[in-house]
Length: 528
Image (cartoon, rainbow, N blue to C red; front, top):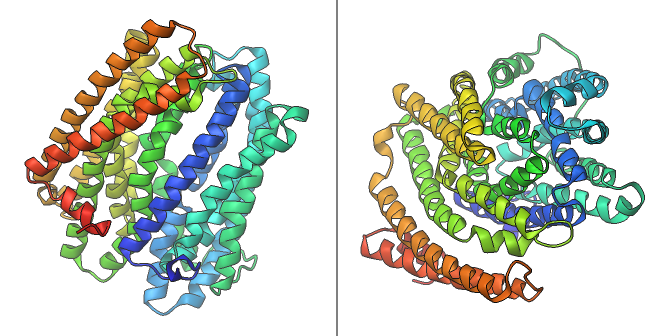
């Protein structure tokens, strides 16, 4: 139980376990949040407007902060802490926060004014009513970016101290905010209630909780402006590449929304498929990456280059192996999973089939999303943000014509395929850069284990897909297009049986091929 104390200092393994468990719970709540939106609005005008409203706030945050609040702060504060200059680190924190309050606050005010023009430009397929609603929701959501930035800074204070428990709780509160806002206000003010709840969740979760426990850890914020502060200059140096550049990891959703806006409901269906896809991806990649970042930074600061290289390669191999296995199950079980989670209210069986198809295509790239998250953090831990962002910007520019061409050739399904191609280019580019700079060798990856997991994934996924397809034909033949409520139990049974079959086949192939994963899993679970 001591591990659950907010001030508990974790090891790399315990931090990964805590954050994976938290991320899993957060994504479960996130799926409940999506289910709530789906039930209320399906893939209609309100749903498209709400999903589109998140794009401009995300862009403002990305291009002015670059996701740098926690990433670069971990590197800076680690250096201050390791050199015994924590007081200077606290002062730099105050300077940076004060400066960015002014910069980000000014940008939000400007964005509030230009929102109508932006929505018409980025979502050319939105009609007048949908665009007007999207503008209204965008203006409600914009201030939340201040809370995310400040919360990221205070959260970095805790990460440097290896305290991960608060980070484990904040996303749970954030996701609950949208649901609570809808329950309390949706009948009176409609879809705006979800936007208001989202902002409240950002305040009470990512911002307030991190601020309270950072203060308990000894951090004291004071409004200070000092353009010559060493920490501010270091933060700008590290953050500028993240701010100026653009990574396909973030831009992928924006690009898809731009093209999908031309088809009614497609923005929402893509968003739902992405939300479902990112649930396991976040558990694998984001949780492992966030837990590993402080340990990568410590090894680099101590100039333990060999240990740094091996730890990063080992982390990439692990998450990529799990990504390959997870992708096979997700693609094979996508249809019953989407049916079970989303059908109901204003979300039809037709919507579910389209959403499941997008989800299956996205799932193919699970191992790539997982690997690039670790590779990118290796660069950040070494204090190098320019190289990955330069590569990301080039890859994004190269990918734009791919999205456009695939959309013209294959319609909306082409956008999902283009997303997979883009993230493959991104992952390879970052991996090669690390190899060329002699930071993490490509030869250090466990290719044998990756091959075993790929074989197990193909075998188990194919077996489950054939069984699920056969059962689907039986259900459609029995009930036709209008499935009764009892079919939910059928979906649940198919999911349960399919998962059991997938586990059995995957485990058998892994054992027969000599994989270490089953043995490690049994050991971690205390089964021998």
